[in-house]
Length: 146
Image (cartoon, rainbow, N blue to C red; front, top):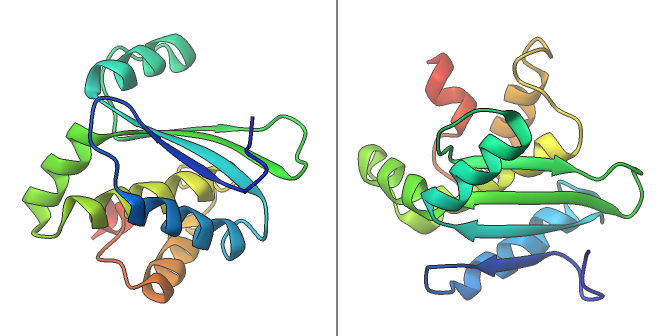
């Protein structure tokens, strides 16, 4: 459930990064057009459990999105693996914080109904546009398609 202050970022098993809360609020105001969301940043074990429980896939993934059913002022929930973010950041040569922001952006787009597997590039274009506006390195979809 969203806080009265807007989008939240909860850290489980890793140290808090206050800049990510500010980034979440920027995503809420811009990308999500005022709709709040909650984001859990946890370890691979937690993401694997959630992926298994909700998607019936038994592996850790980098980001999971759970859109709100009602389409109201709350967009939904995200879960991000800190370990995946750290490893991907090392591979790509940018900071873990940048990778967490990329994953959060990607997840928020999913909360808004984008689906890169079925939307003929609509989500890829939106992710690229927002990534550029937010000053982020190459996004998830671009990595796979380039």
